Amino acid sequence: MAKNDLQGALDLLILKTLSQLVSMHGYGIVAHIESVSDDLLNVEEGSLYPALHRMEQSGWIRSEWAVTEAGRKARYYSLTAAGRKQLAEREKNWQQVVKGVQAILRFA
Image 1 (cartoon, rainbow, N blue to C red):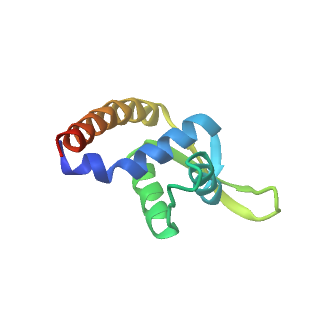
Image 2 (cartoon, one colour):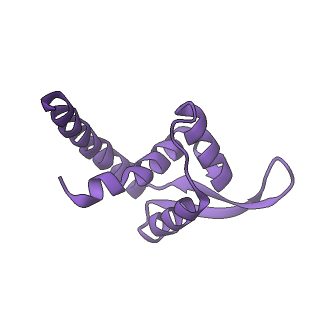
Image 3 (tube, rainbow, N blue to C red):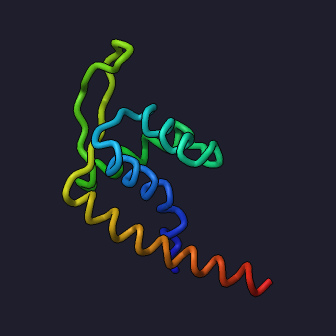
């Protein structure tokens, strides 16, 4: 298992969220992750925005400015074709990580 497999969990959560919601601003991404996980997963802004920037630089997501429901200007993110491919790869890798962790937990 590569070190990035565990560190890439946030990328996986963001990519999956955008695949389900089409286009979302940063706060909406965080709210979705926290809601769907029953608040078991908390994403800090200090982790979210660098990850979004890195993924945009990699071409996995794109962004555009728009007005929120509350009338604020916000950057909305959406998945690209490269992002969909990356999501599929990361989901597959994550399943391997889960199997490995489960094996360790069963052994102990």
